[in-house]
Length: 481
Image 1 (tube, rainbow, N blue to C red):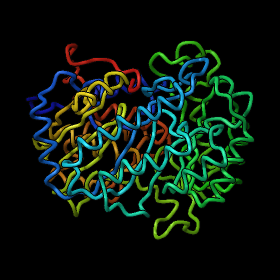
Image 2 (tube, rainbow, N blue to C red):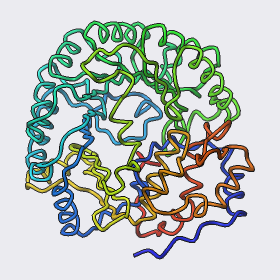
Image 3 (cartoon, rainbow, N blue to C red):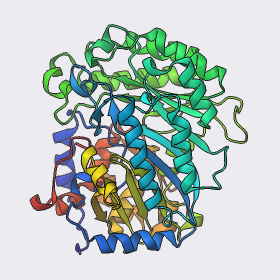
Image 4 (cartoon, one colour):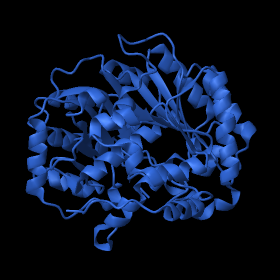
């Protein structure tokens, strides 16, 4: 059991900021603290099973993730920048085999989710639109086996890449019950996209968007800035075309320069500097606001429009929103409930008091190991972490920072403690940098603070991260670096 955290000195905070402010920091959209590199491969399985069982006894609204491991091979590998675990696509038979094991895993969790109500579904990866047309119904049936009373109108999202969205496939995605697509476009410039090794064209992007509209599918588009040789004009041209195509949710984020990715190790010389990327952020923000988009997080921009699916609004994007709102002030005794099935999927249960049942668990990131565990009728868990109250506070803070503000009244209601008292020196350092303002019991990120969300997360977590970074506990994970 860790002792109470001693928060860092002001000098330590200033030194940390000065050391890292001009260095690229990976865009960690963190769901928990610590990051998975610190989760334990050697863990008490009986304690984990008991914590899982205890969570099953609570009626909960759950956000559910299914991982699809397969990606098309590219040169450079992993599109040059991706840090998530994946495995090379091996054909339709490999997908059918994978779905067979996914169904076995779902069966192992039926008791766990017996009292839970699914609030949203997200199928990510990997590249989920590698699935053939007949696989989408099969995927929905697997989730229905866990949640027989699943409301057909809940948000059900599927990720994919432009060149794989054929007319037949989009029709099958729609008819199986998915109502939202998240498309990883990254770049509209047909020359610049070649740096990633992807074989996609801007024409394929807009053909897919048009078909999404035809089938009433909400659409999110991921765009990356800070790309090799990218100019501000090129960035704006891409955003302008995506906006004109009727997309109402754009995730616009800085290129990850971290780990052993090709861009991090081979392309640094042709990447924009941090100052140039900050200028890109500011210009993009101004443009998107002028186009009617509202900034929801450091990366997410939403534009409201008429609803296209029941009572759910296309701008809500519930899966992400629900994960960011861990506990509300009116639900201080509730828990954060994130479920997951499949390769590298994560399960998270968090309680405001950081009780013994607060944990995060990650599935096997080796596909053969994942299948072997399931062949032996064992949950395919690779690593687990049991969270302390301090960890849970940081989880809450991380998600608040993603939304560019910390409501200190909510923090007080959930944790029965004072945010400004606990993090006084950190707040003072950020105020001096003019990265935040504090007004009416709310801390707001402003100016460069908005651009530096990952760095600010790291500042808040600095001391606790130092205390848990013992060599025997750390196994690097390229996907999280």
